[in-house]
Each structure stands twice: as structure tokens, then as C-alpha cells.
Length: 387
Image 1 (tube, rainbow, N blue to C red):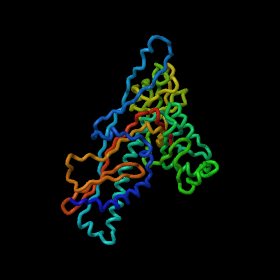
Image 2: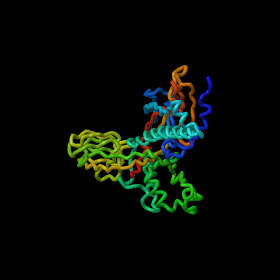
Image 3: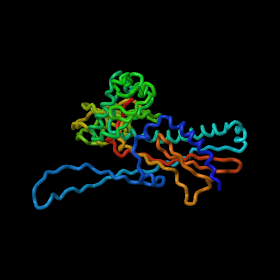
Image 4: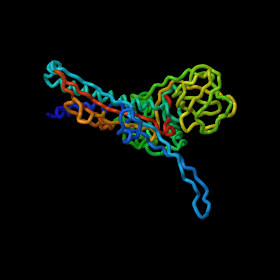
């Protein structure tokens, strides 16, 4: 059988050239998990998580101390989506646009839209991991970097990661369009070679790849978050130590506290992210904070909880915090009805797309396929820059 896709390769890659210029920020900056990529759809693959090691005093003797055992934890990850992005033509439709090669232009644009849609879905899934963030910085409803010559949004994001023990290398910050506009429009210090050390890349090419230790990325998938309706909530009177993550509410107040809500406790300026909630405030219940939990103890008295506003979830993180497992959709042994199958790689995102062609009765169908799953494996190394 002839290789029916060989002649289409230039058209397909022309489409990739288009999608490579889309705002793809998360995909190139997260960790890839090759083990999970080998799993079937919805098959759980476990990645090991090694706990912290406590030190001990050295005491001379005949034998070393009977210590060093650990319980190694794990995080479950799975390929949860297998998606196809279809393109179909009939013979008559092809004939109507064959003149002057118009069909190749249209087909190239269709492939571009398929690649774009696939990459945007992956971006959105990674952006949705904001609910696992350890803490947040900034003001809900206020776009970051709004003050000229003030880069404290970077320094405070770094402080959160530093406090949580995140590696100094491999950090990334992914911004939405409004935050990017502030960076480009209000911070002239980033345009000056003598201050930024960059020979005009931002001014002339709109390029700013690294700043204050962060690999900068921009994404159209950055989530807009609507908060819960909780009001007048308080903790119970049990008291909670530094590091506590599960907080019991008193039966007071109204509304709900949802996963992804940003809250503060009276007397503590840290902004915590609720990892799981949906707690009916009037009925008590519990909320769970993302690791590493409380930075300041809550006293053994009813302590007021303040629920933040709606926000845009720009994210900052260490690469090790987020995992992406992505592969081409599996074909059965011996293949299926596809007349030909090939793969193409997006040089910017690194995603490998599967292209399959199916010849049907007087028509032909192309499928752009991708299978993937995402997971936050280290909440301590993930934070929200509120917008």
C-alpha cells in the first residue's frame, strides 16, 4: 500500500509552524513522566515520593544507630484523555477547491487548528492544577506588575518557593495576557540594556524568557477562578499547629468554601489555597489546605476565616511540581482501518501528534490524535500569583 501521508508532510509541518507561535507556556516548563506515558488510558501509574530525612546525633559505639528506615510515598498519575481532532473531505469538496492549490492552503490551516486545539486543551488541564497550589501572593482582581519599577511580585513568589524548600533552579512563571501586558507596558527597566543586561530582546522582539530566576511563559489557558460564597466562617476551638492541613470549621457563617479558594486566618497574613473544600460553612465540616499547610499556628479559639475574591490564576512553580504524561493514542496490534499513520513533533511544546488517514466511500478523513494526563505531585513547589 502506498504511503498516503508522505505528500502531506510539508502541509502538516506548515500547520505546525502556525501553532508553534501560539501562547503555549505550561507544556514546555513542566516535568514529563515517561513511565506514565506507557500506561493505558485510565490505568494508574505510581510515581515514588521520597519523604524528608530527619537528622540524628552521632554517638560512638560498637554499631551505628538502628535508624534510616523510611516509608516511601507515591503519587498516582494516569493518562486520562485520548482525543482525536478530525478533518474530513469528500471528493466533490476537494475538486471544488483544487484550482491554484487552494486545497493545500485550507488543509494546512485545518491541521494548524487541530494542533492548536490539542495544545490548548493540554494547557488548560495544566493550568487547572492551580487548586493544588501551596499558597498565593498578590491581590485578587488586581493584575500583577501594575506598579512601574516594582518587581516584588517576582521576589515574593520566589520567597514562597524558598520558604517551601523548592529547588532554586528550574523555576517557571506562567502569566496570562493581562499580566504580560503590565510587564511589557509598565516596566521600562526591562527594556534598558544597562539595567536588564538584554540587548533589546523585549523591546524589539517581545522576548523575555527569564527574569529573577523564573523561566517566563505566557498562556491563554490561565484559569479565571470564581470563589465560593462563604462568609463569616471561623475555625473551631481545637487549635492547629504549624504544618496542619485539615482545618475543622465551626457551625457558623453562611455559604461554601471551595477547592481553589484563597483564604486567610485572623492574625496570619499568609494566603492559603484550599485543596479540597465544598464545605457548607453553616454546617461546620472541614477544609484541607495544600501542603505544606499552616505557616503560623492557629490558637485554640474560634478564629475568623476571610475568603478572598475572584482571581486569575497566574502560576509560579518548580518544574518538579507538575507532571505531564503525553503520548500518541494506542493502535491495536496489527493496526486498525487507517490507511496510513505517522507522527509529527511540535518543536515548541514538544508534543508528539499522531496523524492517521482513513479512506472512506468517496471521502477521506484525517485525525490528529493525542493522549495525555496531568498531575501536581509537589504542592509545596506550586503557587498562585493572583490577578
